Image (cartoon, rainbow, N blue to C red):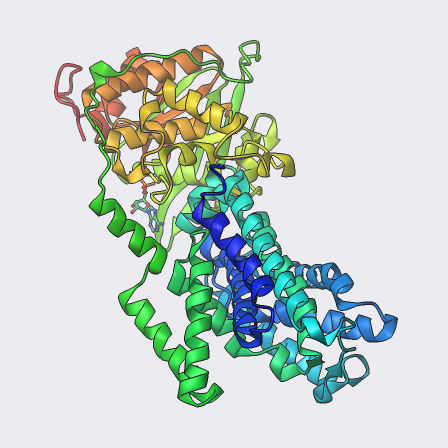
Length: 594
Ligand code: ADP
Ligand code: MG
């Protein structure tokens, strides 16, 4: 009963009931079914362009491919277009995956250009490949077989069903780790790669997923129109309408594209009826796009939600202090205390230049399994850059990186993550649009499809994430947006995030920088605890008392290469180190040099 009261369920029931009650309202039925079709496409578009942030400007090409599949195969086999719909979906997915495999290996803008090129080139092919498509003369499909009495009813319900399928598919994706990974890519692609998200695969899969239902809808649409030609099937106006619908309703949200599709469809009807046809529609849409981007950048749904939240603020308590942090036990999943002591990480002759500046200069570094190794040195000595070379955020100009017996310097960052390498960042890079819990669930410890499709909001992955949050003492912030936490708390969340990857080695880049002393003590405790369970650490830190207390050995970096290495007791008195970094008047009890 409670489910029935859900407004979404009521709306669907109303949409189902309406044509049954008023079967002869032919015109409103067509307006509605066109809205279903637009919503189907906008919801699909939202998967690649809303969740993952890769804007497709030629998305109507997939509707066209579905249509042509039904037209061509239907004409040759006599099969009903309804039966050919899944094939239309597969053809669309095939095209998306093919194009995506080429262009989605790179980041950013090339994708937008390629999506338009895909639309236009498909139109050209459809126009010129006469033998297959009958060129610009187009294809006429068989007329529907059902009685004229029921008019468009089968189409109405087919499009309604496709829209619901599209929404269900999108909702499911958003709840998986795949969906979380897509949002991670949108928010910070480099960081996503560092936490094991195979960004290339995710993007290609998202592009494919974003067009399947649209391809199916294309086959049904061809049947509905009974006539296809290249200009109509691969129109740029259709693509712009999809983008407009998603932007109006709220890109990146589940329901935004649906709401936007209805708004745009009805507006477009009004423009056609009162404004004088397609020409004016182009004008109206162009103007609407400009207005939406200017005045409603987030779209209707997010704007209304934000307004609602302001009217009904939720109580949030941030009375968090170090003293209140209860220590929780945590077992890391694959403890390896019996690992033979030896190098877990080895950097050999690594060099990285930025123009004329040599940031890392033929550096060697060795981190033994089971150690907490420190890397200290003045600002600008190349410590963070060395981390980037080790994790794959940057490629070295020369040198090798070996990890756990394998050479890894040619691997993409996520493969290094799967091998057991985790890092935190000097300036935390949490995904601000996600909750704290989602941030911790997002990392991918391996490359299996099964892990990708595991639930992110509930299930064992979310449970493990809660456990890790409890371990760093921030469980009760699980459902807060990550940006609402203090800087120090964000650093701890980032550590929990890294632990989700079940790393063998964790690189911490200035974990105590800008963090209050209570949280620093907590952090040291966490590092010790994990280390006793077999996790190795490499720590860059300026808080020298902390380093001398926590770490052994200590490596001192200067100008892109190590100048000294040894146990803390030796390092604190080493004249070279005092000279280069600590200063001769340095003592343990003094203020921490920064
Ligand atoms: P540290 O972490 O030891 O403070 P970094 O590795 O951040 O040092 O920087 C080493 C040197 O490389 C600095 O001079 C810095 O300005 C330069 N550098 C770091 N990253 C870049 C970059 N992406 N582009 C150009 N120069 C950089
Ligand atoms: Mg640094």
